[in-house]
View 1 (cartoon, rainbow, N blue to C red):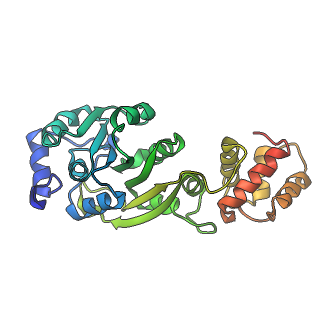
View 2: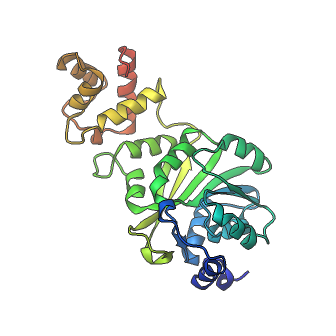
View 3: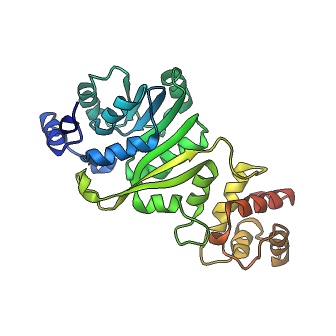
Length: 295
């Protein structure tokens, strides 16, 4: 199939939409990609081949699914909008190794899905143009459930991508940066203009690749508590880490106790949460936990 015939061409996209009488639902964040080069960049970043599988979330009318099917051994697409299922079944008919599931990925049992659909492949990547309103919950579910993933390559809002890849001490660095970097290595692949979508979104987009880590880069005694400490440290960005931790974990204690534990972790109490590295947060959460601090 040559490039002109691909689902992603503006002509073919409009033809499919009109033929099926499809109308976009703003509530589902539907923006269909109509640029072959961007799609090629996304698929290339995933490093797929005939021994690997791909999970797509929100396939729309199958523009990216088609490209994935041309590269991967098996493709599973999960689509929440029932109206798109017959369109996907029609346009992807030439690809028997593509499975389409109707459902909400946030409610899906992904471990069972992996066992069922990807038993025959060596590695699996998630490759998707995600609906922007649920980007973070979907990515955190994929990472926290510790699925056997190689890469997550997604088109998301540019601002969110920059936060995920941000370094300590920068304005974009946040608890999201730490969560993503705890589970994966983020890397911006490309910035995507609004003009390559139907309809055009209100924001700029970016493709980000998260290379999923086999082990976190730091050792924490309790993952849940580690993330509680991170969130508390960013509760009010303008406050020092000492003030933020006191509000959350030491409401009845004096300032001396908080500051002593921060010093024990090698952290100056006057610093702000946004200046701490992943390693410093790990050390801090372990020190607090060993001192008997609980949420």
